Image (tube, rainbow, N blue to C red; front, side, top):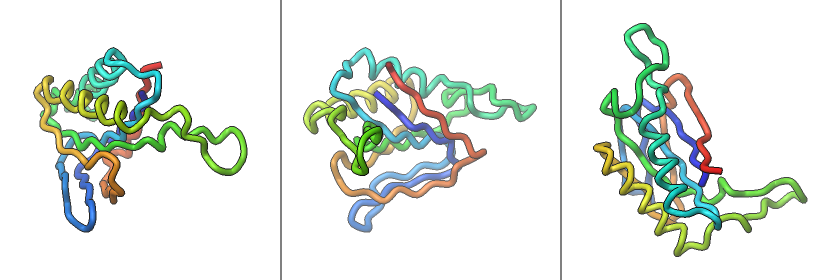
Length: 146
């Protein structure tokens, strides 16, 4: 599992011109599920995302987690994170999970984050989406289970 985590002051996702998810301060999570991923991978990455200390404390040092600051999550599925560009000019997506497994583990990821007490907004799995954000910092980190 691979997640691109971006600390945001706001973020939104649109499908067919309609906003389907929108948050204020928190994290935009672009989520890629691989063929070999299991529930344990999902649990590890979800826990890492909500507990990673990347929000500023009173001295402006990255020392607080999403849980500490009461932030929100916008979760967007993105199989293209598993694109392999080592050969040729067209990415290979052979490592990406099939849609059924990808959706199941994406939804399990959202469930894990919500169980930690975080409010989650989301995109629509498999849809063409437009994502907008204001990256606070900027802070962008890749979190992987393997």
